[in-house]
Each structure stands twice: as C-alpha cells, then as structure tokens.
Figure: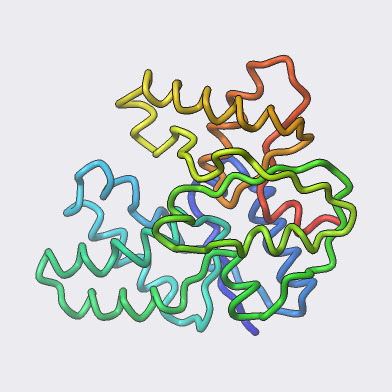
Length: 241
C-alpha cells in the first residue's frame, strides 16, 4: 500500500524521531511511505484559539496536499482529530460547501497510527522488541474524539520483552491541551502533577502515548524530577527491535 505520512508540524519541528519511527515501522510491514513535502500545520491550533477564518487557508492547503493519496497516516490522535472533526465543519460555516465535501473525503482516508495498524492492516504484532517497563497514557483526543479504545494497548502487549504496567486513572487529562497550558497555566500544572504521580506510581522506565504534544508536557515534568523515567512515543516503541 502507498501511504502518505502526515507527520504533523510538532513532530516535524521538535520530534523528528517520531516521524522516522513511523516510516520505519510502515516500511517494515511492507508499505511504501510517501512524504508530501508541501504539508504544513493542519490548522488545529488556530481553530482551538478561535481563528477559524484564518484556519480556512490551512484546511484548503491540506486538501490539495493529501487528496491524491488513498491512505494518510499520522502519529497523532490530536491532529487526526482535527482533520476528522474540524476541517469540514470550518468549511461549512464559511459557506464553502465544496471544500467541506473534499474535507470529508480526505478525513475518511486519514488514520491515527494505531487505527491504521489494527483496523486497516489488521496487525497487532508488528515485530517489535522493547525490553523496558512501560506505562501508557491515552491522550484526550485519541480517547475521546477518535475513540481508539485499546488499540494502542493491543499493539504494546504484542511487543516482545515489554513489561507493560497499567496507568492509574489513565483517562485523566495530562493538562496540556495546547494553548490551554498557556492560558490556564496553574490548572495545567496541577493536572500535570496528578498525572506524574500516577505515572511514577508504576515505577516505569518509559511513559508512552500516541501524541508528541502530551509527551512533551509529561516529559517536561519528568525532566524536572530526580527520576529515570522518560517519555517515548508509541511509534518509537513499535519501530524498535
């Protein structure tokens, strides 16, 4: 299968290892991965901050960039959630009905990584080996918008050598929320403190998730504590051997 990598602007700018791991994983499973170089931000941060009109150009550009591909995969529940639940709505509100229809079609072909592996490719064992103690944080957008359920956990359970430990109160938000962490810094920090307590209660080597944004928040908190635990994206674990 020919797959377009929607790497997301955060991974592209700050966590390129996540994009590389996604490519490694998909190629190992026998698929051709294409990186459309024209891709930019999907517009999620603009929409979430109230700049819907300004986001329209990004939505339109996203359509032009990804329309040629039958499958579009992103290592981010948050950005896939934006494509699925914001793009068509924004276009409709602006009276751009053709763009809304195009956005709906592209959304149907856009998958978060665990969705693509489990639902489209029909695999849970991707041939990974990761001999570390891991706990998993299900990010809000993947859990509530995309409803990925236990797909990431099914993939992790199949990893050779992993010691997967259940995270207490796993469904609680880590406090990131994009601009929420800036506009409501004290609340965000308190939510992060709760999340870190739960993470550390599992004595992990690694806390994993499907979104670099949440891992950046959690990893930043861990880096300020005298602990050895680190934040690692799901794609990096699945690409390991």
